Length: 519
Picture (cartoon, rainbow, N blue to C red):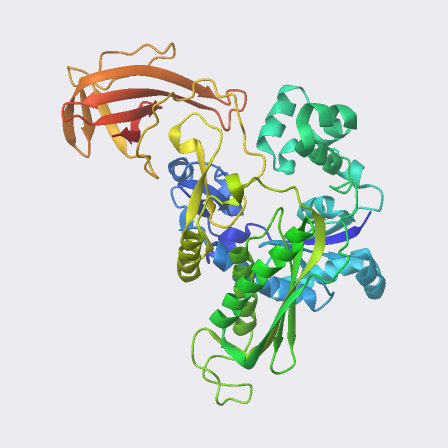
């Protein structure tokens, strides 16, 4: 087993948007809490909550939209601090990085001394963190979160350390829910199951999670090594003075790298990016991704590296001696003379299905237009819909940035109570509130037995009533009844108003909302 030191910065998405550590803050994505601070959690705010529920629990909640680009740029400061102590820092994701611990531990006088030194270095750089050492990255991350600032798990003791943890740390909600219903509530109980039975019952992803619970490496076989040098490199003559030049070249190099890997049936799960500057400085970073990093995603990470390097240099308008510095916001100090992308960890490529006769689903013309817009507005500016599980129309689609692979482990049902065809034409990002009233003007109520208090007579939207000419329902959905924190009980109606408009309404807690509209 590889001894790994993990550095974990708590609530990093909240830190990246500038919320003070002592404040009750949260970042949201599509109306739900993506991350929150410790002060917000103390008030009952939790990840995955709807924003209005979080604000009801914490009226003073400071809310910001999530900024993944800022997370990546700001975390480079932490990575740079760790890189001063040990080479080859691997960025698992913004907020978590790791290094191999054996060599540095011998150099700095032991694993505990190394852990404390790394933690103190990051804190001196201005960021709270925890650091932990254990066998494998999964156990090391939990060790970094343990106690007050992290701990060292003795060699060979990862399984015992992981045993008391709940299944939620696997970050596989569907698997965790299923195991809890089977009476398995901890990693230790999951690890005690026979490996062959786990693989047969839960599939490849369940077998991987089982290996993590047992404190083993996620893959039973070491990643394959390339027989030839698959790295790609570009030189700039004269040196590139603008970050945009380097980022554009990084995208082209990433395309070349993917072509070379595809020819050998390989995929890269850890990529090393090196940039050489005119003053002789070389900036290296390792980036990990569970799957194939698209060319645009690689270019985005190169931008993060250059942004962090620029932020660490003197202010625009002065060079190190105080004169003749480039004044442009995107200027690169000293100029970049070369850029290299090298696959650091390779695995066999599982492949992906193309369209018939070798054609892809997106034409080259559309792909080039999408690349251009993403280059101007960011990697997440254009997304494509990917079918997913769910009962409501807004839950059945996941938006994935163009060029990226869809997330793994999407639930596939069955979904009792799922909305039947035809599908609605428009699903708003945030369902607007509405009122559904009967002939006497009283709100329509759905009882616990799904009985309607009175036939709907009018639908009120934005203060304007419209008579209901036809309606059907309710269709109840009692979701996650076994988990009080995530339980939802709601019912759906379809109504047609006198102006010919058709709506899909949902009622939850006696509050009506327009979930979707029909053409």
